[in-house]
Image (cartoon, rainbow, N blue to C red; front, side, top):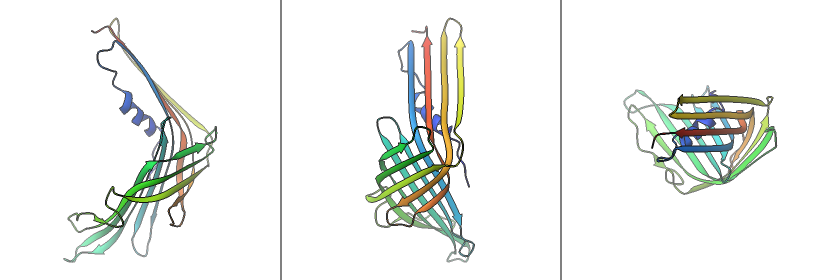
Length: 215
């Protein structure tokens, strides 16, 4: 099972705000976002099929974006007798809602997402995705509901960095997050609910200050 640190939230914020505006001697900024994320994987000994599912719901303060993906691979024998894989993938994204309690012990994300489904064979060469019920990135819609339940205490992280050239440049950044690990009960359309045994829910904040005497 892959586990992604909650600090990954902050990395996305840095990408958005790391560069001060051009032609300004002083710049200040901050960004806050709340995110629920979860992952689940399985392996069938009888068929050799592996499945991976992920869900992300991010509240940027003025909007909530949700993304969902499910991929599977089953081993096959190719026409030339060599081993290969039969693959399927489904992805969907769009606006939604994310509601949490004050300490991130529980939360619910929901939305009607738009996406596509495809399949392809890998026999040493990748075949093009074959649309199924919608083009890749197309017009397939599905209702997604994810319920988070905490299984850990509340955790906090904080990092601060600074850079200074005396009399010339001074910059400071700080990154902080408050979050919990937990489980997610995920329902996608009419499919059977999936229990994601690894999930995270919490808030990340990034701030920066920059000033320079350069024109």
